[in-house]
Amino acid sequence: EATEKLWSLLRRKQMYGYRFCRQRPIGTLYVDFVCLEASLIIEVDGRQHAEQIAKDEARTRFLVKEGFRVVRF
Image (cartoon, rainbow, N blue to C red):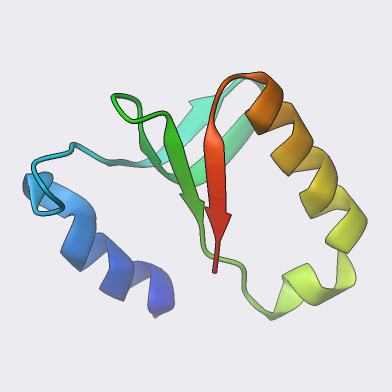
């Protein structure tokens, strides 16, 4: 539900004219939302992420090394 609400705000360049893509691969990972122009990734973490903190931290490190800023909600 949260992902759908966020997507309704991000799609069709509604966020200051930036184009976001949904469920896009970056390396071997799929990210929730990415704006390549701004090198920005937005991840929406559900309940299951409370049990995989180390895995999420490793994902974020990889994405940062690839040149992205990562925001998690």
